[in-house]
Image 1: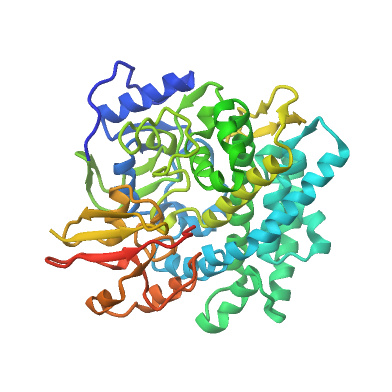
Image 2 (image 1 turned 180 degrees about the vertical axis):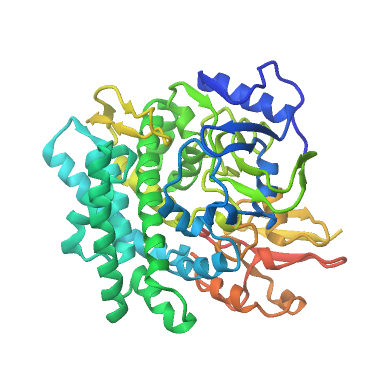
Length: 410
Length: 106
């Protein structure tokens, strides 16, 4: 694949906070210069951070990159934060063949087909939340009233949490969210209650299966004879933690990026349902930069370890070295997309890697896409005159840079 | 060089010169053909590269494996008799293929 050849921007990586325009120029300059950079992480030592979209795809599709040494504790995960042990028991740290087995079981329950069947209930719930907001009157914090509640409700629905338990499920689950910004002791207490509750629910669904994910998983045991409660719980938790936080955050980023780009907001308002699918992909790729705040160059998904010497786009990665990719850089490498510095919500070909790629691609991708599409389209269909009622607050201390307060009115 | 004819749901057709050994999915993704996502990269775990293969070309391929068959039950658009996951359709010398992309993929 060709790489662009001209740029004047510096190619150091990582880099400190700069304007989105400059960040885009730097991402491109780095990708021209090299496919990856070796970076020493705050935890776990060195890791190759991949910058080019094509090189990232190559790594993600190569079965010689595994996560076993992280799962077994043989190696500390080289990353920006320390990974809690329970996260290392989840499906994202598994390798084939066990990963394949778990993934197959979960995938059916969260497949494009199953998610399509959930769309009507998502629309209904989004409108219920909007009704409450409208009744209350602006200004409101959209994060509290809308962007968090929608994904939590949808995941409760998918997992099979009964309606009467949803308020407490929402309380426990939302404590894990970066957007909730809660003290650590409270997070631990809520997480413990959530785990106890989920274990009981798994047991109940094993006895009396229904049409939901936990029932599917609990009763897969009979067909496959080895999916234990200990395997089901981490799947549920990774969906809760990965699913709510990121989806809530991206819906918020989507609203804010549209409000800050009136030309694109006009495009969106012209046909919310029609534009929502491409808008969501563009928000996933570029939304954070379209907000206009300064961005730092340095980020990445969970790493892998090379089990053999591997060369990717000319860069030698030795056996035992770790590698990850920076999705922001891969969405702005000057090659994968045309005019990648432009926020274009009608962009049709959008090979961003925000939901990753290969066998570890985001488990909840179909659900996340649907929730974002519904969340944005319903909001703007009902309240097209939505405007900011103050400064949005971003938690810059948090890895995901969550928007914790998005004051809006109409 | 095998050609792949991709027809969008609105009838617009695009022809790509493929490479022997590549799949219909990877050929689409590398050339920016809309409507084929292929998020799992061919690991049979996403059901986002669903296509309808020209019925006369079904005989060029073995029947779907058990894993493909499972994933074909998970696609966003309805499964038909000629439904295939395009990551499993590998191009061979001298054989052009014709696929129609469904309305919804993911």
